[in-house]
Length: 410
Image (tube, rainbow, N blue to C red):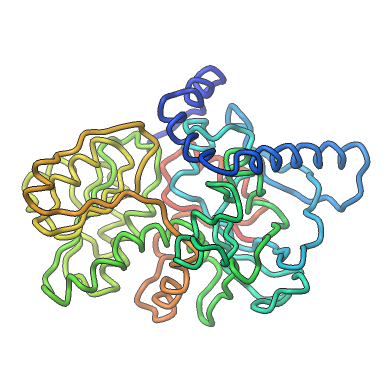
């Protein structure tokens, strides 16, 4: 049996929510539009109460994770009909994110309960009068971040920081994400259909594209913007991906594996992935990625492109130390408050460090195009598949175990 995790109790969840790291993350969420965020949360609570007392809309199933690891389908009001710019969609393939385990177990600043799920391919059910890019019956990729497509941030490709909604507005994170609902439900409201939804290309299956909403694009951002130019200068450019240093790492490993796949698809001849977990190394080897234990890292020379995918301060430190002169260290970030930096080494090597969140919607066309060529097959990372009816059991096992990627389909 692999590693097993237990949900945090009320006291530990509360302590996590009041930690310095949570305070730092919270500042980012309320740096602007605090009133709009509060109003949205109040309206969501009021709507739920009104529908409970005087039902006026149909109901639907939504998979909700409550404290203590209690995961179950609940009957909730269905979203109202879409506004002029919106759409209503039915998720048909929903994938786990690497963060979902920590979220579900109460190990993040996001408070529970949460309607889980933020990576999905969906079928369009209805669209507003102003929507022109999608139509009912189409299968579409749904980015997990809410974005309008028209503000200065969206037009610049910074779709994770859309100015039309409060910061960190996203599906699947409950109150912490602005109460936009979750993809593990029978319906999902999309407020800006033309800006957000992207039709699934011919030949790309929903299961393959489910994680394009988040983790696939998150992996691509570490590789796609940097590697092609590096390979033009040096066809032997190596990519180093540094993931977990502890077998009890809460974060799943799809992002480092996807990053390795993208690097190979774009022409890298050698990609190394460092992870202490045997099942992750085995998955990497099956994908053509050289897998190493952390103890072997000392013998690995600095690489021009390093992906810091551990989401820990130790992994970040090691990744920065292994970045070659004039190289790039690209970090997935993390929920820890602070960490050390080898400033003199980075400066002496003239290395660049990037710590950011993915702008998923802006990257989705490039990712889907790469998938359509057949060179990038993210479905090979999926370790467990099932149906919506099996979701409470399969996802419960995913959250408590060491599964890499679980996908459920309608």
